[in-house]
Amino acid sequence: MADVHDIATRSYNMSRIKGKNTKPEMFVRKYLHTNGLHYRLHSKNLPGKPDLTLSKYRIVIFVNGCFWHGHKGCKYFVLPKTKTEWWREKIEETIKRDNKIIKDLKVLGWRSVVIWECELKTEKRNTSLKNIMFTITKEANN
Image (cartoon, rainbow, N blue to C red; front, side):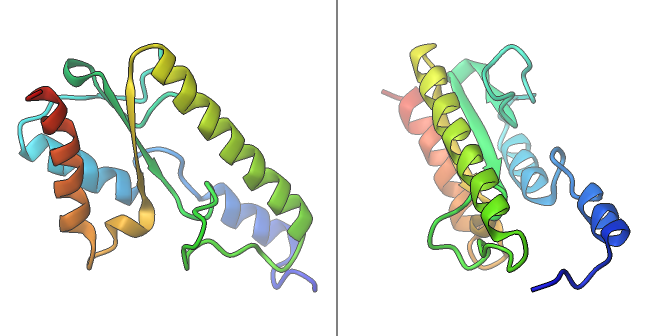
């Protein structure tokens, strides 16, 4: 099956996809800030440059796009019909890298929270954000 766009259009479309300061990431940032939590953005000194780093709690948060990080069982993760094998390999490598980063962070004494783009859709957002807050604060109180 051929791509519905020509090469130049597809290239332009792909170049417009952001890796930082995405809408889902902004929801999480705003919620944490509103609830008085301080964080650093994209810490270069930690494996994987986590989206948010809460040093006080030794927690990092990754806000993952369902497609780009291969969210299994998610309706937003569908392999493209063109270049399917190339996409499968690319996403599998991303999953392997994500798993290694989380293991490396654990060795360094950091806990990782992964929140998926689909968990920040309107109907699930409040519950998901409260769950993040609970995860952060429950460990602090133990």
